[in-house]
Length: 66
Image (tube, rainbow, N blue to C red; front, side, top):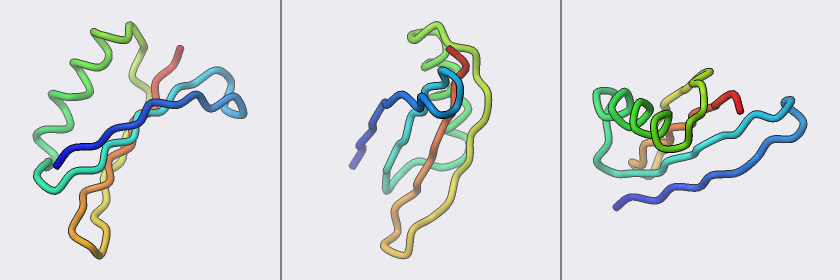
């Protein structure tokens, strides 16, 4: 399962966040995905975090500078 959402965060000065929910992503996948997103979206990577929900989903959020 893979679900992603891209949305603007106007309160953070023009940054964009990418949120990924997945049952099969781990930290090694996040680096690859972050580099791919930077290339595709032409954004500068700013920050990311990963945490696991009690239902077993990995919740990964990325923040990019526009």
